[in-house]
Amino acid sequence: DIPVLEIQQMMGRAGRPKYDREGQAIIIAKTEKPEDLMKRYVVGKPEKLFSMLSNEASFRSQVLALITNFGIGNFKELVNFLERTFYYHQRKNLEALEGKAKSIVYFLFENGFIDIDLNDQFMPLPLGVRTSQLYLDPVTAKKFKDAFEKLEKNPNPLGVFQLLASTPDMSSLRVRRKEQEDLLDYAYEMEEYLYQNIPYWEDYKFEKFLGEMKTAKLLLDWINEVNDVKILETYEIDTGDLYRILELVDWLMYSLIELYKLFDPKPEVLDFLKKLHIRVKHGVREELLELITLPMIGRKRARALYNAGFKGINDIVRAKASELLKVEGIGVGVLEKIYQHFGVGLPTNDKKKKVKKGTLDEFFK
Image (cartoon, rainbow, N blue to C red):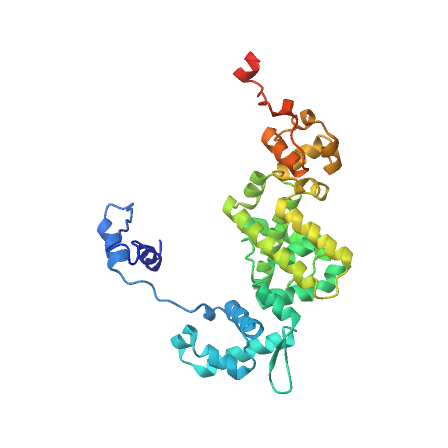
């Protein structure tokens, strides 16, 4: 059910202040008792609000942001600020607030996000500043930093994807009982490629780890050009789930690269990460990286071009328009965009409407 608060918030937008004397909002009832909706959503009270700072990840991120971006210079200033938040207003427990803030500050100090001088003044460090700019949970940034040494020794997609899936900024896929054994075998087989140890003896962490491996396998399928429909069927998810995961991975890959740049990166590893980021973004194998830079060319059209013998930009430039139009998915509109990309116009003869086989156009041509 939609929360009362959400309905009332949307109804509150009806009518324009200063311009309308009243506003109108309509609730479309799927029940035979619309009075129940009236009683709940119009007359009823909204749900109780809770501060987002009650979430540990949000608290960590906000404390870091206050230090790196908003000039909070010491612990006293931090507590004074937090005392004025809705979070403290709800709890009224200064001792608990100070304890929670102190543990976060200690975590940030111990892991290189901030430094503290002899006068107990906070000093933001590059890792802390960039983490805050990227809107990352500091725990995610720590996981990335801890993995860099192994990443440099063995750069591989599976290790990167499992690392991303293990962070608090990304929720991994749920593992069904029937999948557990296969995922377990897969984890054992691929253990040497991982940047984190398998938590064999911790049940909760191990179950979560299997979900991370499932998510990593999905991402491997995606960059190896497995059909979208097959991915949805194999992992029993819907389209929205797939693209939510891809959107998160796009952000986390970018963040991983940005943080790696702070730690004397090896050029070949940085190049690997950048290529992997592009592959995830477009869902392609490495040989298609050049083709997907062209306008209106995604994973399917790029593969069709490659399979037809057009393996790179030079092949496209040298090809006749008539040859390119024979490739599945390449129509006049797409070809015009490609030609515009190279700063030339499409030959006049090729601008004519392409006749579709099996149609009346073909019969009367």
